[in-house]
Length: 464
Image (cartoon, rainbow, N blue to C red):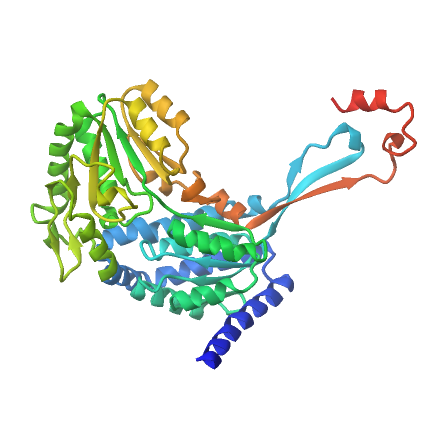
């Protein structure tokens, strides 16, 4: 057993060293190299589209439409954005120089981090692997990719595609579970990009601290929805149901629970019922558009959350297919099992509040969420929520769609993560801003040199 462990460790060490050597050769630095490999990645994915969509269906029961819309399509858009803007992103940025440093010019170089590790989750296995990888390629890095073992079919296919497409000294990938993750985290990386739960994120961060390795942690948490008395209830219900039951609720930015003003709750529940039936029929467990829960462990966890819940709609499940019908829990309370953890499934608790101010107090009393959603026609309430609460990102009068915009940063804060990516921020995530001041040789101001007698007045004039 010990020999096997030592042998396994040598594989990760060997790849790490190969990639470090390859990066240090300068091979990944040029624009031509980066743009070529972004396009190579897109070509490889397009050549395997049908297989990818089938794998997503096998792992999560995603329809072809949902698989393309929430995984492949987003990856294509990200790569396309980076292709379009890469040359500009790579150019040094100009910066102003203080008069005290006359004569000089200042600029910022955007250098690659180096050898990076990307660890991705199972809920959006393709998107949350390939979007960071596109950022790493655009940034001029080498990368080791470790997808989740839970999304078995998609992860195996991704590993196969990457191994056929790129040399391992440039982009390598590994399968496996906890032992593989531990072995990879024991290596020295120039940057780690992790997407997953806050609990595992803490482990990753602790491992990175050994070498003071910078991290981007995309985590999760209980993302709230605030609905005030002015909300357009039919449209609110439609957009809320879509965002909540997308991927059977297995979305890091899914609405986790609702804080709704008392007066709108009865109408909201009725509208949600209608929208659920429109989307998934009166028998959602037979709908091809309702995904399944990833594995038995998570299925049983969600079943446990229903044990003490006040289910007013849904609640049915199929042990054979691991499907759980979209479920509304009302009235819900903070003592419910479903309110003790991130739900990550198709269960929607609705809690009653008297006002938006009460909702704000409740959200503030818990960890900062990855996402927050406010449904209201009142600008004052919208302004109050957005300015009073800290969260990763969110929407006004919609859910989830903010993560589809490459121009918007995507990331958490506090317990929901650190750092962000998408579009320009993907490039920034995988590069370091190196500050340069280039001084002229023909002049050298004497004010900075000792002796300093009689120079303070001039210094005060220059630095104020």
